[in-house]
Amino acid sequence: QVQLVESGGGLVQTGGSLRLSCAASTSAFSIYAMGWYRQAPGKQRELVATITNRGTTNYADSVKGRFTISRDNAKNTVFLQMNSLKPEDTAVYYCNAHFAWSEDIISDYWGQGTQVTVSS
Image 1 (cartoon, one colour):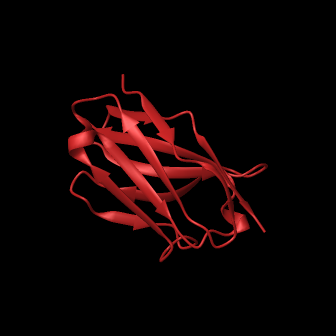
Image 2 (cartoon, rainbow, N blue to C red; image 1 turned 45 degrees about the vertical axis):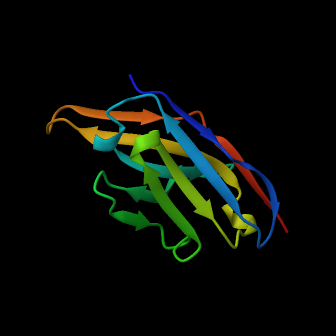
């Protein structure tokens, strides 16, 4: 079992920045693909950004050029740097760890979420 603990959320004005962190309780952190997802009130959870165990990144179109995902395997931590924040970025942000041991055995873990609120 892997525990993920997010931090760094808060209230920021439009155009501001926040840096989210997600610390994982596993020494096998480096094998996991990590991701950030978000869920706004009344909406489904959506992908924000992912980073593979080799460092390949992927972003939702809505955050490209503004958000940057990175990881520090030595500290078992993944980050999400969010710049030029907009009110529509307001959501609960969740950290995810994913690893496919085989086609049938997949490990998928979620953090408890951290609130990000962008005021206009």
